[in-house]
Image (cartoon, rainbow, N blue to C red; front, side, top):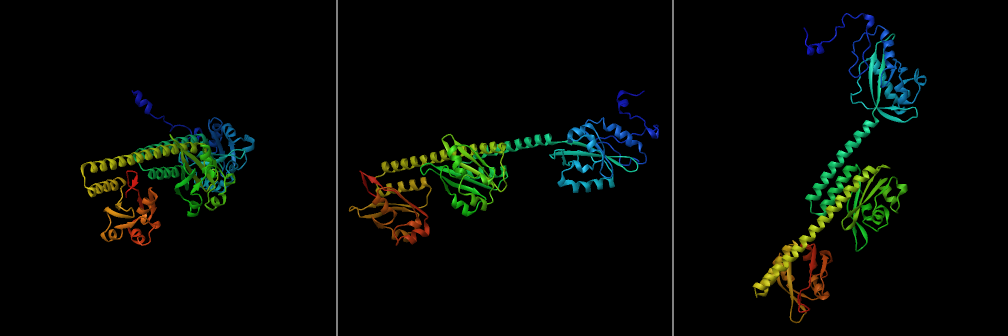
Length: 463
């Protein structure tokens, strides 16, 4: 007695079937035995009968790659009638650019007929009657026949499946990028670092070669180039400062809306020739908008026309918003640190003046607190003499003795300290601009930037 389980697992005995009852190989991905005899033409007849019953688009071709039969789903898929296809070469259904390669594949296939499932990873292009192309998988099975083997092709249009896969993959990529953006904005507190890292993410995401970040200088009413990738020095110099309304960046800043330039013929500014030299054909510009308003503009460019679509722009806008948030946070952090340093200096100076009546000790404490707060390496404090004609170096830090000897006494007209006293306001210069020639070489040998502020007491400058 056989159990139900064994009954289900028991295969029917087909060894007693007469030879003329043999069926052709099934027309699915698990189908044809490669060693099926090719002697009889009867499987051909049965195969053609089965063709009409298949729910998928299927056609039979001979070893000359000529269509022998098609079913109704094939007519619906390709847009041809049965009469238009039967007797025609199968290359009719192949894009012209691929026909030579397809002919070789067909010759190779009929030289060694075998099962080729549709899930082998091959993605092929087929062609509708109207000339439009579509992605397809094509499963092939040999049909024993005389005088030669036929081939059964089952075609699946995978256009929709690929669209869904692409959408899903893009969404996964988007989420991954946004996660990295959140990490950057959370971890980085430096404005330059945030700009650079987000710009590089945008380049990677969009698969482009050129990028530029411009931040708005509200006082000058200009967009200042602060970071770039892929452009020449000549282009950088020509576009380092842009007015609102000029070019793509200026238009984006003026309107607050993103802009896509699909082709240079649409470019709204005077830089078209420069852009051509840079091989930039397609441009996307997005605003950097934070809680305080417009902060700047991010531009991306490619050497290929029409490289940006609406879906990609949505993600770029999201990146731009993340960058703007990061910039504002970095600026807030920098301002907080600046204020803390300011308060620290005031506290230290106040403490020094309240605890000591020694002028030199008080000045030294004030200078050291200032150096630490500003994170600078050298400094000194000058005091005016009684005649208000000469500045005397009262305390100093970080300079060698030989240098100190040369700057121990300065006339009010000398050096950056003399300028601060004469103008009664802070002065900041590069070392290359140092005003006193006799001191310039020693200054420029060890210092890059100098700042001097006047000391006030009872309404007068005292140092």
